Image 1 (cartoon, rainbow, N blue to C red):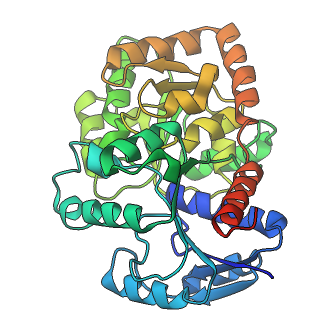
Image 2 (image 1 turned 135 degrees about the vertical axis):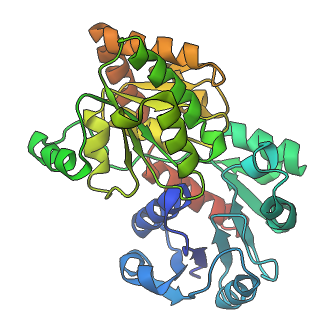
Length: 368
């Protein structure tokens, strides 16, 4: 008898959106007898419908009391509900899998005492982690954090790493990149950062290292920051101005998915300076595009980058500056990192991730 798995796919932006969208696309190919249904917002229904057996539209915002009621109602007939975030409906009856990418809001001093964490994130994470029949996370670092922070036994947590999309490749068209340069007002050559601007992303350390190299005439590159975060952007912009790098730092708030592989492939270097990170997709995406990576030695980043990246202490702008200079001054090192990175990225695929999810669904429903 065919079993129905419902995915709450209302969040299709950022890292959670990348995870959800790619799993749905791969489930379409490898569902292995499951009917895959999705709960979506109206704006995403057309793009999701082609990958699912059925789509249910529930236009309700996340983190609300209404979603607790409406998602429970929309999923009441499914055999298994999978929610890719900790906002799962506590009123749901039946098997439930929840993906918890990280517990950064509980572990980072920047968030753990704010009102949203105290009133919503902390109680919901604790409640959902206990209600879920099983938890999926994306790195061993995150699994250990969930065990330590939420007190969940490791036997109830499965690590399934993210994949890297097939669009991220070193084989890109130079003529198409000219359009990107013109559109963003980009000055070549450039160093790249991709991600939001929240405190745990540690962008200020990157800015200080970049400013140090520019100030001492050891760097001719511009810095491209790809990502939007209205709450924290003004802080980062002011830091650029205070460091005297406002004229060589470019902010690209909204970049189309077709532009992103071109940006990665033409950057001389990606820097990932996070102090906390559940996975770190930009590391893999840059590597797949043949771009050298310098990453923080913290959290999950060494787990993802392996021996294909250079690492630095995330609290040391001086150490980051040294690593940036090492890469940019050595053609041999750049070639080595490029080759190692491309190989490292091949170890992570959304196909593999989808197959492991399907195996988990089967096990939870007693089909193995």
